[in-house]
Image (cartoon, rainbow, N blue to C red):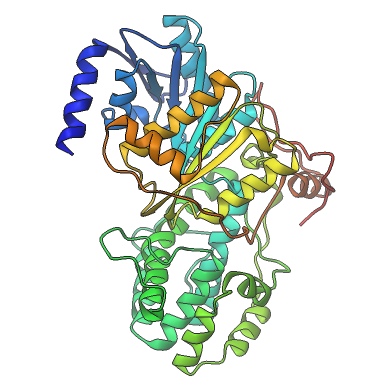
Length: 461
């Protein structure tokens, strides 16, 4: 670590000073950009950049001549179409001050990664490329359907008579629904039956078995440790987002964006639990899995609201990439699950743009748990593709070599083929559903809406 810091300090001295500009966009969102004295023509624009001082990866990139810029989510929150427009306004302000950028690049993580995917789809002519880390790449509807499943199953099987909300999150969720949910789930964790049912919910939500970096990764043969890891991901990962972020999204969109009508949870379990962990936990607890699956089949289901689906239309991805995109996701991320990256890959392949996309993974636990070396290596891989027209080696071996060359310390790249995403929601389904409801998809002026690609049938849900 000391060597990496020394290398970074030396590079920063060689690069010269960095000029910082801060201000406020038209909607009141703060922005910031940092311009190195010897600019290489690339500017990296991301959400949350103006929320705090630049991190070590941004400082390292500035030392190489990259300008770094961005906004915050303080005004927009889950108003992702506006956050995508704010990225363009920030780029406009940057170019008005410093001239046209040779390589304007979308560069965000978490909600910023999601916004990056929205902005490059909505403004395909403005970006030269995108590096998206731990973003919700199954789209606003797909990701919330996966999260819906986890809490729906947990409520039906663990607290069916309770008033715990799965959708329709109340305004007082921080003092009401969230503590109540947490207490119920933590009590269930203490019993074999509760652990088995939490494992069922977490498995169908495609949550990782290791998401807390403070704990050791569960051994493959230790079912109890793996079940505890799934509980960590559901109770101390998905749950808070399932209350807070869903509440905000419901208030903005005017309704619910996710549904489970017609979902066969038995079929989803068969796809998600191929090694039989859930069945073993049920047998150990003396429970009937078939009875619980029957209870889920009988439970009243949740429908999506057309006006809410229309509101998030720009956050449904059609995969028609107009520029190179590199994604990065940790295997142990309970908020951005690796399977959601697979859904994005499927959309890109259906659109015939597979050559534009490369996806990378790290063997690490936690949401957006990347090292500076990993992030900078990702930028180098993407910029290499933009400049040459050809991707460098983005396998774990190739990315590890790029990370090692940065001198910024450790990296944990791993080759990984994620499981198929169980709850996909594509542009064809969106457009067919809205047409059937007589509702038009929403976008801001100048934004491109997702399209149903020619190879996909229009359908409704």
